[in-house]
Image (cartoon, rainbow, N blue to C red; front, side):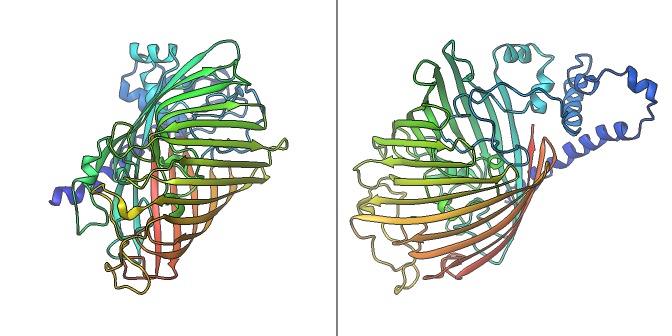
Length: 507
């Protein structure tokens, strides 16, 4: 038992040796006495070549790659060709340089913007590394521990993902292997694939019914913040892409398990403006399994159409339901505005595991390259929650005004609705620091999404500091309030204040 309690702390400490290795590698660079003549005779690519020096061992090349990434990026680095408007933002410090578009790695016409992380550099001298480079296959990932101090004692929910209060947590260890199709060219069909395996506490939120879901659904923990094993594994993304350049201005067909299309926020830590998630995001769809097409009509308009097996249900699971999906994205010619209305999920079936009907609108506005705003609003509902037959689903909310905690009646038949709106104001302080301010209002009308029939507001401010290309530090302060029922700390409080800090180490 003590081992299990110490596991997240021990895993978090894995960051320290890597950081020490980076510091050790940086120290000689900072203190070596090099004459002007020596500098003139040194090739400009000498630092980069260290990670590709095949006379070194793998660990030495890996350390050299972290050292190289700690150096300032060259302002003369070539810019990849693209077919369309320029990127509206800088990344870093923002998590993405592009306007939001779900279901694909990058919008059609945008080149692969992935950085080459240390693992790929260290593999470059191996036969596997050569084969991957020849076939444009990438592999990388990250380690993400966090810590939080909370005014709650029992649970931080509906704050996510740091649901267990006042502790160090091991949120994510993610391994990724992918091939990004080249959608800039228009002369041939191209293909790609994407596979992500996630281990950590965050599996509680990403798990799909029918995909390793036993560890979450069949392990009750009545004295824990969430049911399920404390740490679990989720092979959460697995799809293939086919790029067809001759349909309109280019179409990508995606088949498999992919992230749900809308939302400013994402499941993966590095793709978010803040450490925690909005309530709006916490309780909506996470992943879909199906087929989605993303078609570029022109530089301003992109159309997405698809079908999937229902939110967070595998197509082979008996909770799956055939579900339609349709979105359109518009970007102004000035590149200062973006609208992204989306029917994430629509069918006529009753509630099963998480059979949501979800309608979302996102608006983005760029005040300048350094300041932009994103606003998302949605309405979601399930049909006839009280008729759900899946054993993991509750037929009654935990808290409803006018009833003692845990004694509320079953959900009424019909549409069990919720709606919310969230706004992000994002500011680039300098190339290595960004500030994000999030304000949100959420109304869980019958308690179907959070368990408490109440209105919520949450207010969050956080910063992302890029120590190097490979290491992010994110402090955050959050206050939230439930207006109609004491929804925080498992029904004990109307409000909650949380201070958090996490680190993301890319490898």
